[in-house]
Amino acid sequence: MSNYIERFTAGERVLHWIVTASFFTLLLSGLGLFSRLFNGYFTLFGGGGNAIMVHKIAGIVFFFSSLYMFLKHRRDVSTFDEDDRRWIEQRGGYLSREEAHFNIGKYNPGQKLFAIFIAAATLILGVTGLFIWAPTLFPRWIVQLSLMIHGLMFVGTVMFVVVHVYLATIGNPGTIEAMLYGDVRSMWAKRHHPKWYKEASGENP
Amino acid sequence: MADAIKAENRKGFLVDTSRCIGCRSCQVACKQWNKMAADKTVEQGSYENPRDLTPALYNRIRFLEVGEEPGGVNWLFLNERCMHCGEAGCMKVCPSPGALYRTKEGVVAYNKEKCISCKYCVSACPFNVPRYDSDDKVSKCHLCLDRLSGGMPPACAKACPTGTLKFGKRSDLIADAQATGKQLYGVNDLGGLGVVYALEGPPERYGLPATPHIPLSIFLWKDVIKPLGILGFWGSIGAMLLHYVTIGPKKIDEAPEKEERHE
Ligand code: HEM
Ligand code: SF4
Ligand code: SF4
Image 1: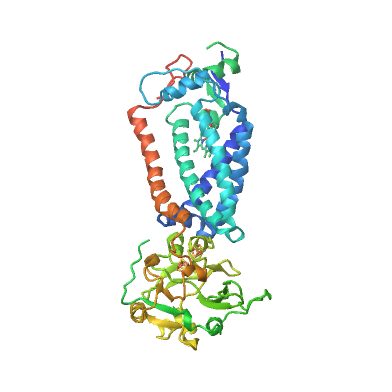
Image 2 (image 1 turned 90 degrees about the vertical axis):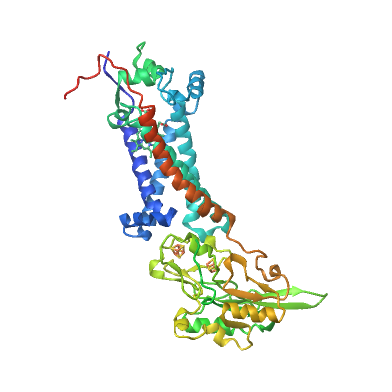
């Protein structure tokens, strides 16, 4: 039995890091627009006008790459089974120090919900962003509503991504290897995604 | 944003619409003083011209034809411009400090060099006033700041031949008008408008909102989502750190195939 098992292809990893890079570019260029408290972030781009331009370009990259990422693994993230229900009932074991074991497939329900949320947020941020881009072309109420919703989804997305980054790094040691090298340790796979490990390796863990 | 204006310094207009004859001297004087080119207009079956504020038109006369009795028509004239609101929606949302700013006279002035062309101000203005020039920079009435600083009234008020546009100390103008029993619009709305109207009839008849306010979604955006959002950012980071040190990470079980340590 091999020590490692492939989790993501190189293409999948590059796509994920394109989404991530464009996301953080959007975050940094958007902070100054969100509140004057964050005005200092404009200097990263050489002023607010440039920050807006960068935000628009990064927005286009994020919109298409993020939706493409969702479409590519929509089959893995859009169905929930009985084992997922157990995971949700016990909050994935994250709220207790007790060892918890769940028979999870490629993704756990938390990851699935995160992926679905990000896809929905990408759509909403993209559409509202378009109205904000050219406010004089649309009725005022649409632009006003868009400014509000864009801000709301921005906040929600950042908060979810904070949780995502925590769980993908220090919260679950070994996970980051999936996105860095593509291969994860078999021990990791058996611990976190036993059902997927069984299918992918043909072994009985 | 609470930008306190001292009442004794605050300058403003009192617009007595009953005196207006629709001569548009104010429109022309403004264009001349601010050196703005003519706008190309289209004949649309009205004396009103142009039909909306433009980047090169800071104030204009709104012509309203109101049918009173059968066959009769009442012509109403309203000088339309930036109201220099006490609580200005445009200033609330502007992300570029100094692009829109308050002078000691209470004027909502602007500095095009600092404007970053986000156009948030147009969405936040209760009166749909700001326009954008060919460089996409904000433009609107600035109460002839250059004239004010030289002790002169704005060009429009100077040119008005009928006394419709009165400019001066805001509190005095309001007191005088109230003494003659006039109903005033904008005395207390939005922290008090810098342009107060004596109207003949309800504000809606002039196309003015009865109770002007900052649009609800703009209020929710800036006064609810923004502060709660900033709390949320730090809260989510704090919650993750707390989780790490209390419940802790999900370690992979010690296992034989785990690589040996090299310390
Ligand atoms: C420094 C930032 C980030 C790190 C370290 C990171 C890390 C990871 C890792 C390790 C995985 C694989 C999880 C597994 O194997 O089960 C993953 C999956 C994923 N990442 Fe990220 N990521 C980051 C930022 C982002 C951002 C900004 C987004 C989207 C806005 C995103 C969206 C996703 C999605 C949708 C998946 C699929 C699995 C899921 O739904 O959780 N990631 N990420
Ligand atoms: S009328 Fe509009 S542009 Fe003028 S101060 Fe008020 S909110 Fe700003
Ligand atoms: S368009 Fe200019 S003045 Fe208006 S909110 Fe944006 S930066 Fe401020």
